[in-house]
Image (cartoon, rainbow, N blue to C red; front, side, top):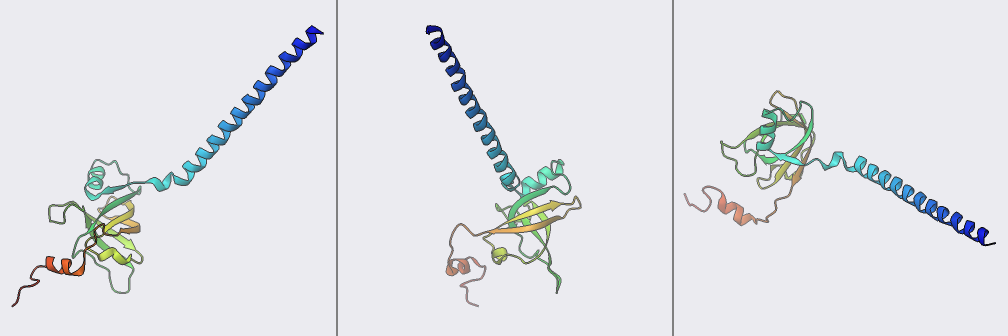
Length: 168
């Protein structure tokens, strides 16, 4: 009888280990499947954006391939927007947000579609998502406009305009 009691103990140990091993294997498979779903869902959407200077630098050393989807951030260069009458295709230039002087890096872009409301706001940051064709033109497939981070009332904006407040 003593021998049968020892055999009973030996059979219980492998059985509990097999349950634990099975649980660990199932948990690992579930975690891997969950990770794969998250990667598939967010992998393309986690593309960060480059400034115009960064984009020009990467394009110059050919880190950005023709047709590769990228995001570029900047501000609209005043006076560069052009859209032919009865057309939805726009041509414009953006520059780094740090400066809009003639020494700033600029990028010529096109977009076919309706522009966001704040596109022409001089304080808004514009994010273009699209591809570069290697011919000097960035073709935006989507335009996002970030609202200005600082509220400025109309009086402040008018005071900054040249000639405001001077009587003639």
